[in-house]
Image (cartoon, rainbow, N blue to C red; front, side, top):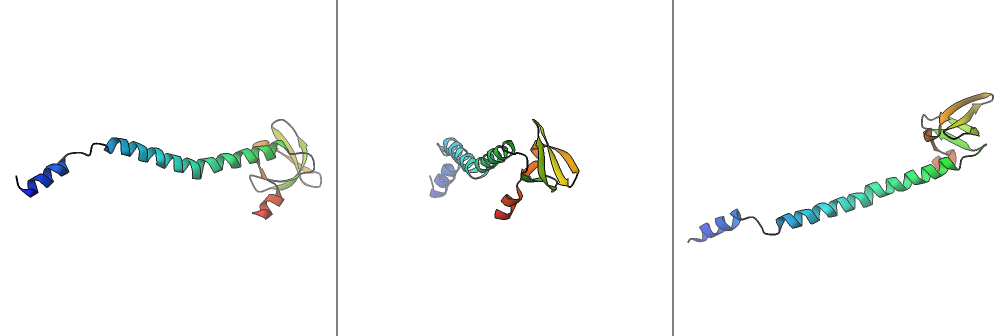
Length: 106
């Protein structure tokens, strides 16, 4: 057998542990992705929900549409937001994004 034939035969045979190493690599990639992308997003969502649950009359807020206002009344699923003197709008609680002070800190 020539040297070239031995190299070709060795290259044709699949590596014995390739399936296991591929599985380990995929698990590691998913773990890193979860650590750097999904986990921080979950943390931000929890903080935002905590902020929405703690809203009370007189708090200044910004809606998802960019409307600045003051909380006039808080109900189970919506907030009555005063945007000007004697001008109030009703928005869903999930549309409250942040307080103006939080925006300035960023």
